[in-house]
Image (cartoon, rainbow, N blue to C red; front, side, top):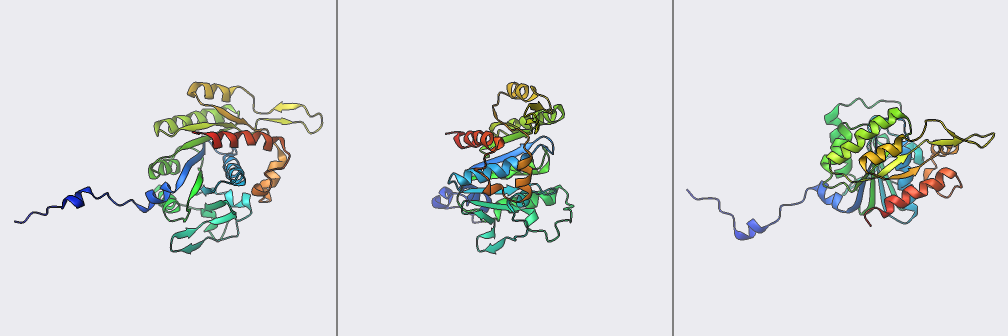
Length: 277
């Protein structure tokens, strides 16, 4: 019986790259923005990181991977737009010349309809966003993850060949800090470098006496950072003006607004930009 013998040329031939691997190789930095629990402002951090780095001239993509609670399109005022399709795949929405956004919210006709999916359906959607969306060549792809360490973060970590970093967002509350420690452990277990912790919703200024008020307490974030040997890359105050900017869909238009929040946020952008340089 004749044996199926491969030629030396065939043996030396490299296996073909999958579409997903090929698309991810065109992206220099793939960074997930995560939190241990909801309500800490993680999507705010992801949206502003993407917008600020795009302002600095980088080509940036922002993937809203929160299937059940997508909020990124609202922040950029694109919730009524719909992605197109070409030979390369799904065309993400271009917010500015340097910033592209993709979210499940852009594919749902009725914004009041909940996404009632189990794990496998969510994993398939995330894979499609990574594999079928025509991201092109990017300097950064930020992935806004839902809170916790469940299906979506694990899917992203398994699908992307190499994640370049994680930004972990928390508030000073003890409840939030219990969860953020789990996020740091999750990143460590998956060998994803932690760029740093962002402490959001820290102190606020009294509108009457201008005194600084620590609503959620202090000290816990510093302890978590020390325990896990990671840096705190920003301590953001509570600023009501920021909520107004997001509600109006103007995140990408307010980069130079003279807010204390914006000035502090610039340090976070610097940390991400200089990471691994």
